[in-house]
Amino acid sequence: MDQDNRLGKDVETLKDDISKLREDLTGIAQTLIEKGKTETEAAKDKLSEGLRDEFQSARDMSKETVESIEDQIREKPLLSLLIAFIVGLFLGKLFDRG
Image (cartoon, rainbow, N blue to C red; front, side, top):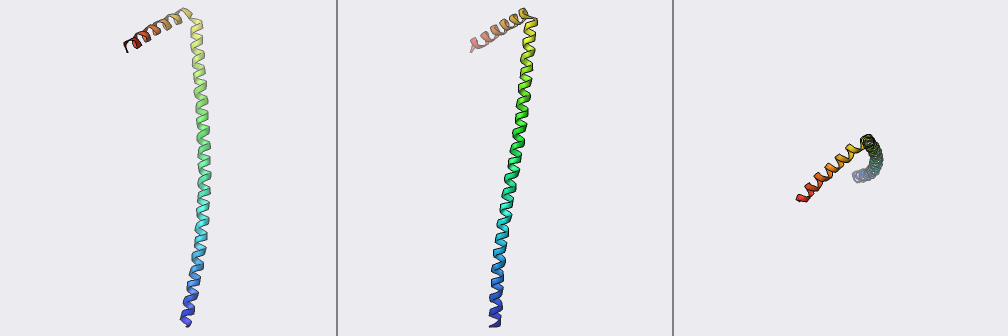
């Protein structure tokens, strides 16, 4: 009978240990999920900021290019008109073949 009592206590202790282990694992899983969410949010913010910077850079570069072309047209309007005419003829012939 003494051995049955000891076995019963061991089983109860084992059940308690398993219950505590389950709680610990649940806590660890929740911590990992929260950490993953935080890191994902940080990565999303960093990517968003990088894309915003690249878009602004491309916008600035295109603005500078347009301004440069406008300056060249102002400086040499006849040459610009001739180039536009030739490009128009070329494109007309190119699309006329299709």
